[in-house]
Amino acid sequence: MRDWTKNDDKFNAIADVLRHILSCNDQDYLALCQQCLQSNQVAKRLFVDHGQVTPPAAAKVAFVPAGDTQRPDGGSLRLEAPPPDASAMSDEQLLKACLLSPTLGPPSTSAARQWDRPDDRAAAVVDVLRYLVANPGESDLCLRDDAHSFQLFATVGRIAPPAGIKTIFMPAGQTAAGESGSLVLQIPTQRVSDITLVQENTVCCYRYWNSLA
Image 1 (tube, rainbow, N blue to C red):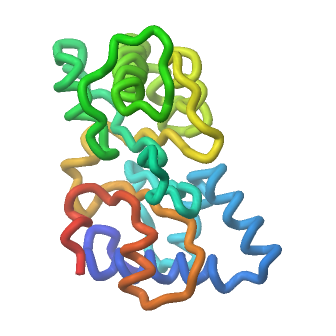
Image 2 (image 1 turned 90 degrees about the vertical axis):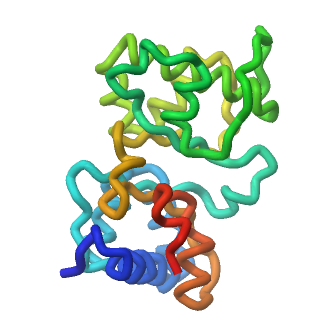
């Protein structure tokens, strides 16, 4: 078995999982992609069955739709659950600590929020994070169910996320977990070299992944 905490092993596991998805016939490919998008447990199991590696219990594996990183709005939101001391943080500190997606900018004060405005998305993120700080049990639900966090943005965040994206929460502290951290992948669509395949389909494996060759 491979070691999740080693870059080379993780790279090869990701490549094998993505190639397995691409090897399916058209019908099975569509079905497997849908399962991966809906269930993080299915995504995690693929690494055991086809990546020859067992992700740590604390690590989350999630897929976002194909083309997610090319969306003009930045695509799916990747966040960490707020840390225990989050209640003492300013809005800017909270965003810096928990937002794994590209920086959104200062939160807006607009009452009517639109997803295509980065400042409105920032305000919605802050509201959802504050809600999770006040309701710790909701953080557990968000970690288990991406659909639940998506719904929180519509209700607590007062913004309507587009149907083609996801809002994904990772356990607190995952950014500092380095090689042992969680993984977000984009659905693969083309057969290319392993390096290109992994780089194009790895949306976020936290900061250490950016330097992976």
